[in-house]
Image (cartoon, rainbow, N blue to C red; front, side, top):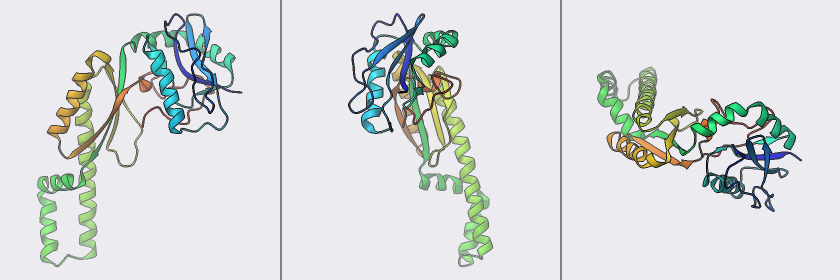
Length: 256
């Protein structure tokens, strides 16, 4: 049976969560696999694991329990290794990297911020800032709607202007919020969001970061912001997507 990996910590970590339940139904027993001065928090991997609410919460609870006592590198939900030996092998091979990350992420949390446009507000902004578009709309109105080609041209120009606003607003939002964070990661693009950003924030500075988010909301009413956090710093375990082994597979992230 495969090994499910929740996170990586120092083997001297004072509160590694032994004897608690993890993912699966019934919950698989959480245990510790050690290699030198590093430890992996693992359990057996249940068959047919899917990102259901119960298992997502179980994964999070294990990390919360471990993170309460010290630095833990969180793995994303669904991170698997072929067996315990594969886990210890990677702990040995990447020991220097994991030690550096444990130090760098100690006392840090992640906030994920997604932004989208209020469509009515952004269209109003586009029209207000573009006299050529206003002229085309007025010409079409006077012509009873205009020709098909006129309407097509207008639609293409509006779409291009909205895309330009999305890029501009994404860059401005990142610039504003990263001033209140230690690091920023750009998440994958997805339909419906103009920005998907993860910020690494010292736990004791979280209020300052959230105040910056509220400032962004107040100064940019055409933006709709969704904040998820504090989270374990999933996005900062690796330069790219965090995975515990070269053979691991991630079925879902720990973020929405």
